[in-house]
Length: 471
Image 1 (spheres, rainbow, N blue to C red):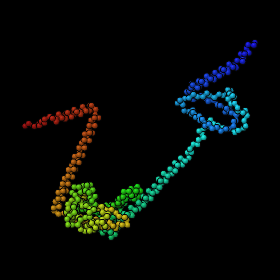
Image 2 (cartoon, rainbow, N blue to C red; image 1 turned 135 degrees about the vertical axis):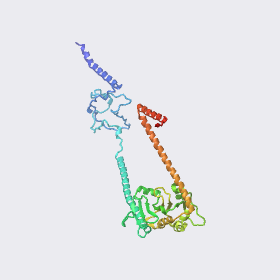
Image 3 (tube, rainbow, N blue to C red; image 1 turned 180 degrees about the vertical axis):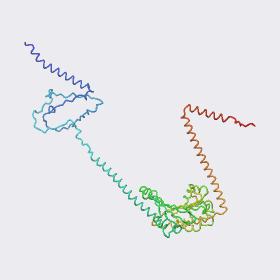
């Protein structure tokens, strides 16, 4: 009965060894990364924080830098999994080694415990930048953009009404100067304005910068149409552009001459640069006006800034009279009264339905200085009478008639060529359509069509036999 007693002493030791081995095996398997794929399925055990609570210790300063241990994110798998630490034990420090903390007093005075959360790390003490200044700066920028846009819209609206009023005042100033009672047009035309009554408006507004004036009731002509093309003052962008690239307010006057009141005349007068451009661009000047007319010997001529393009020297000399040179186109008078002159074009070969016309183009001065272009406007009725009464000499007429006959023949050839080209184009389109239709036909339809075409060709090739009735 005395032998079993030692076995009872070894049983607790044996149990402790088995438990330690079992725990060591579990720890090694977890350390070597076994069951790593099933970590997400493991249910985390709740740990009582009171089990890890240490006795209150006095707080002391340490010069050693804190070692930061980054906490891994459980949602993102580690590309290089490190060996995880063994799972915490729930045995409330059963293997506590008291010799590891030698020299610590068993009882400490009560000190306020420092609460450390699981997410607290040494990096948490670093102050993060406040996002409020960035939002404030963005709001300021948005407010600045809105202020700029609203101010631009206000400026655009104000400029629209002010520019519109400026253009209207300029057009009314011209009409009150030259189209009212006792003015140039009132003395030379019986009907002014767009209506027939006395209360009819003088000007027709076609846009914020386009105004038209019509007059009729004069000999040698059917009527007169003046078109004022002003700056786009109502448009803020156009106004800014005109500050960089300046332009002028212009008025174009078209006089529609009667067919029997105008002889064969092709004539143009403009500034030198403008005259060369007109000769290249206008078709009647290309065909009938050869070159710039040189000033004749022993006679006054136009100012050096101007150039004359005419069908013949005779026409140029007859249309540049002494009165015109003294009033506008002379050397001295042009410096004073010809600042607004741009061009003058007289032709009986203009393209369109109305071939015989007088064309004048002037630059408009300011509304306060409208009287400066009085002599330029006076050229219109003067040249209506001059061209209406003008007759060519027999020699000049023969040359102009030959030139016009040649031009008519060339125009006819051009028309025939255009017609032939249109016919060829139409035939090509029809042939293409037939080919496309044949491509869509079936084999049987193509065979029938070929047989029909063959029968037609054979019938056409057979000799014709004339039957005569016998007596």
